[in-house]
Image (cartoon, rainbow, N blue to C red):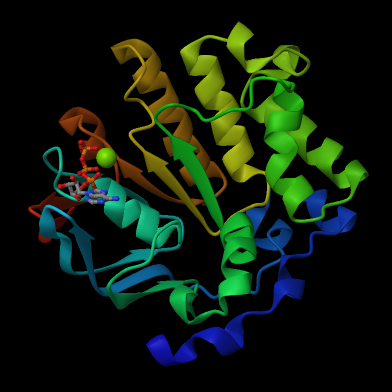
Length: 265
Ligand SMILES: Nc1ncnc2c1ncn2[C@@H]1O[C@H](COP(=O)(O)OP(=O)(O)OP(=O)(O)O)[C@@H](O)[C@H]1O
Ligand SMILES: [Mg+2]
């Protein structure tokens, strides 16, 4: 699997022209990807991560391996400090493993030239964080468009897509507001819309409901779940909530940096 790596990477395949975008509701066509039903969205192969600090060496992840199919909604659970965020950051190429490989849509991300990794991340991965990470001085609509601005999407395309996402996420009336005027649940909807802007291969969500009250957290979770089913998006979600993790297709249990269980729900 690793051998398929870098040769598959063709930045042109990310191009979304306006004809494709008219098919927003048909994600396979609108993604601009050459998708194959048999290909996994993600392969994590023997990933280990060591941190070296003045306090000594710490093994945050130890030989983690698992795969995620396209369109799957997978949860990652485990005690605090078990390595969940470290794992998610490595899958999203925000951090590098000490050893092992991560393949997104068959592409070995850490075999890419360093200069291409951030572009790859912006186009292939959508991030949703516990603390929303929105830019406060700019409007909701602009916040959603940021990944499109970075990837060089045309202004017309950006507007078209961000309007569509505002509509899908039920926040069209907030388009011209600033993030600080919105509730936590609404801000997380903005972050979800932003994560979908470039039609990424994988959406990574690190405790997306962690800052929300139970009811709003459930609303955000079911919104993610419906996006995953309706638009067949691959979503990997870290949660401390066992009730919500049961509602995902599969749960990966991490303990002391090791994969303890990988169970279908
Ligand atoms: N940059 C770093 N330098 C050194 N150690 C780190 C670093 N980042 C994380 N760690 C350590 O790696 C281990 C795993 O941390 P991680 O943040 O992945 O845990 P987590 O499962 O996400 O925890 P939580 O549920 O509290 O968010 C912890 O022991 C942590 O202290
Ligand atoms: Mg964490």
